[in-house]
Image 1 (cartoon, rainbow, N blue to C red):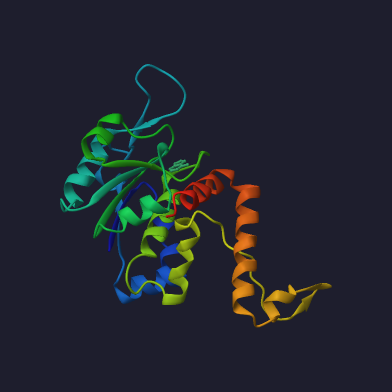
Image 2: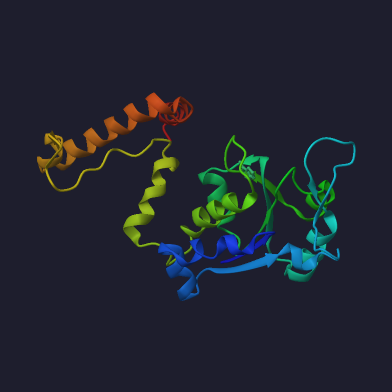
Length: 232
Ligand code: ADE
């Protein structure tokens, strides 16, 4: 899997891509990052890439030209091209899974008031938001997309860990986990987990998942109920 990231801040990616599972995947070559510095393609004497918005308003807009030049110089023609923006389609596990079907994903990171619309119209297949809040730049969001998609790349995770996405596929949040010691801070691990009775444990875990989802994610809980009613 290749992630090609267009950014004004290439140094942002240095440490995260060397850490943890992502670091291992990069070292072993199953994931490749191409970090493209937009500023490199600016023809401005001072390498500026932004300008005032037409029509007025606060903030600056990233100019079309450096983005277009960068993309023309780096795109292979096979990539899914996405733009990270709070006004995009919300990222969820279904979208992550769909994206993982591509061998190459190009991610455009914006800043300030965003990128000139003509770049989005010409080069972008999907605008994606990671949530209803505004970040200082698309780089944080780009890393989240790359991480979530990478979990589907064969060899990125061990088999055990790969079961975790079932949390969202079944529309229920995960059950609580405990490990040794059996008693910590005066609180004991629930008896059922020590019982050795696997069907009882499974039922308890399902109940906990339902309780938690119902309490903090009524939207997911509704989906869970609908699928149950439909017998899916
Ligand atoms: N850039 C700034 N905020 C963002 C968000 N919520 N999602 C994706 N990209 C962003």
